[in-house]
Structures are given as structure tokens and as C-alpha cells.
Length: 321
Image 1 (cartoon, helix red, strand yellow):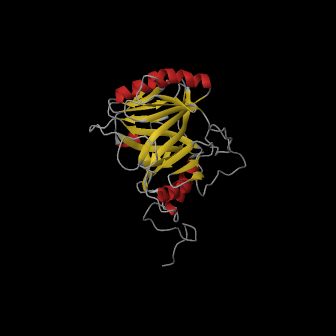
Image 2 (tube, one colour):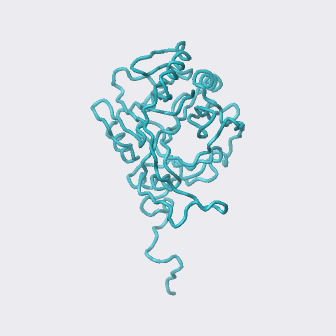
Image 3 (cartoon, rainbow, N blue to C red):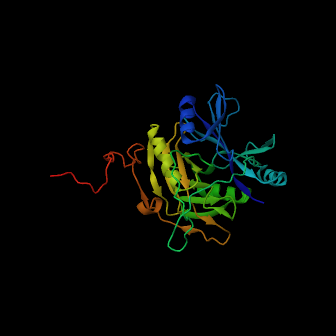
């Protein structure tokens, strides 16, 4: 028995037209629209909901302005759901209605648990030829003009009390710590076997609570780059990327999100098992990013921002003196 991953996230934001454009450009499918809310699906039908602040019953959230107000986690079976319901029944705002358990975590985040409604998907992804393993034969690597995210892969929150929050997710939902910044941040995965993290809990010296970012899984590094350049062409602002995280090995690209905080494309994170031993990292310029491009790549020139566009000739061609 284990939590399988994120099934649904809900944002609160006033500017629904801007959020609609952003998530359509991001590569999500709009499945429902009203004056009060937008509902999108990823490829595996993970739900991304954006609700206007006036929507009845909307959770309060951790901060003012646009932000995430609820995360729903998926489990495998009804018996699993009942087990987690028993674990959460003493937490604030507990309820069990319409097949979904709800409660509030120690940081104030509204969480849900339900039998997973995501759909299995089989996708062709880029193969990589290394010195020892030649997996791609007689086949070029893929090229993406835009991204179509597979699912919401992880969420990152600022927490007031990291130790208390980590203990809650370990004891109540069975999460496991993958790696840590001692006294500052904890990367947690839903189960001993799985991707490097489904949640990152970060405690700031100020004790601020809120959303840092939501990360969307894509097929491979090529889709991270192709998706990021498409977002640039649509006029969205890069926060950082593309780049690579040493802690999880994942490639990333972060964008500012009108629904709140940041959105990340990522791919190629480490896969862990119960034999993994959690590591401690001290913050530093090469710990967050082994490498990263500040300001992103220009989606039209395919070069760093401000660089000259490529010409229609070989780079070795020289202008006559």
C-alpha cells in the first residue's frame, strides 16, 4: 500500500483568461470552462484546476493572491483509501465525501486522497546513446516544437515547521525522505520505490508559508527544451532554465505562472528504491543547478536571450575581407 502520486491540483486566481492561455500554451488540454473555474488535463488525465477566489467552498490557501490551495494524492484501491482515512481522521477539517478524503496538513495545505483517476499512458521517448549502451540505432533523436506534459510530478511548498511537516507525511501518508538540506529542506517521495521526489518542503528563515512551484513531467530533455522555447515564443517569462539539478539529476526549465508562483518542465529524475540512503547537501551555487541558463533560450533564434540569430549559412563560412 502506498500513495501513487499527484492526482489533482487546484489553484486560486482571479485572472482566468491569463491562466487559460498559460496552461494551453503549457500543453494541457482544457476539458471544462465556466465563469468560476477552468479544468485542464495532462496526458494521463491528472487534473489541473484554476478557480476564481469567489468559488464556493474553495480552500483558503497559505498566502494572498494567486496560489495553489489543494493537492489531491492518488492511491490504488478503496481499501487503501480507507486506511489513509483512518490515518487522517484526527487532522483539522477531516472529511470523507464522494470518494475523497480531505484534511489540512500542519502547514495549512488542504490535501485530498482518492483512488487514482489517472489513466495509464504508453509514450515513445528519446533514447540516449552512451559509450556503453547504444539504445538508439538507425533513428534520430526526437525534436519537439512544444510540450505535452504527462502529469503533475511534484509540488514544492515553503513551510513554517519543516520537521513537523515531514513527520506528518511520513506517519500519515507513508512518504519517504530522499535527500535533505539539513535544517532547511526535505525532498520526499510517496513510497520507497519511485522517482526522486513528489514533494519538496522548504523552510525559510522568515518562516514564510506558500507555494514555490509545481512541476510537470515530460518525456525527456528534448521536450524540456522544446517546450521551454515554445513558451518563450508565446511570450511567457523564464525564471531559470534550461538547466540540470545535481540532487535529482533532472533537467528543468522554470516559468512564471499567472496562477501562482512558478511552473517547471522536468525530465530524467533519479529512480530510487528502499535501498537508497538519504543524503545531506549544503546549499551552494552548484547544488541547485549543475548548470543553468539565466533568462532562458529565445524560442525564435534558438540561442540565449540577446544573442544574434543564426544566419542561413555554415558557421565556418567567412565574409571576404
